[in-house]
Image (tube, rainbow, N blue to C red; front, side, top):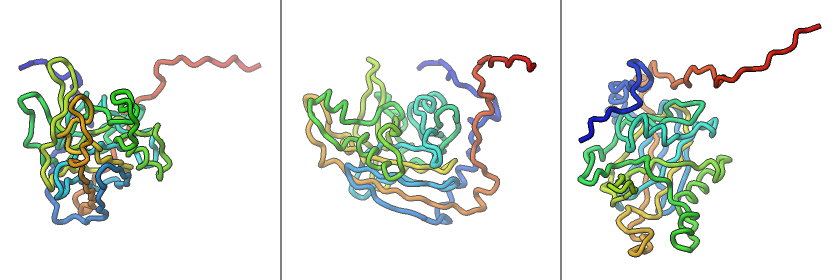
Length: 283
């Protein structure tokens, strides 16, 4: 076992110190919530939706079985502020679970959401170092599909997300690296990315609290539960292991969020060490 300490170690009292009691109270009060929206994203498709600040959102596996989902998230009012997977990996880890946060891009660098529930937290790390809900892998896309297979296929996660955000005025250029929900992944001894079949069961969920007004998008991955190779010598069309995912947006009781405010951006002055030219004296 390595004894190496994490490089990013904050001072006490920073925004990285999560008020776990606050989020645990939100997670526990399931009977007092109001479900304000519920819908199902069909297999091999995508959808975008809004989650107001101070609300909770669940991604849920349906009765049909396990399914992996590729998740994007933006500030609803400013899509330049969006999930920054690499900084989130540094601050939280390669895989996320309860009490972890997804962080936004520069110059905003603040929590977009905080995870309040994870019914797969029992999985932990397996014998190969695999864990659930990863920030390691990019979304599948038709460009890499063309490189690997020599064929065109329009329904990869990148394409699903692109279609999903079009009604919100966003494009392919706004789609970004993802949180892979219900996906087991890791890095092998050769430094290579690997995936395993999802351990999700019907009714499993990943739940989060919106720290800002959010625009979210999710693709029900065309590789399904990842039990069938999408590329390589054993690849075949995994359509039989592709399933829908359900989304619920909940409004918690007002008394549970009293005193909570959306996180602010870092109070950095923003000069970046630049020296501004002085103006000549008047006259």
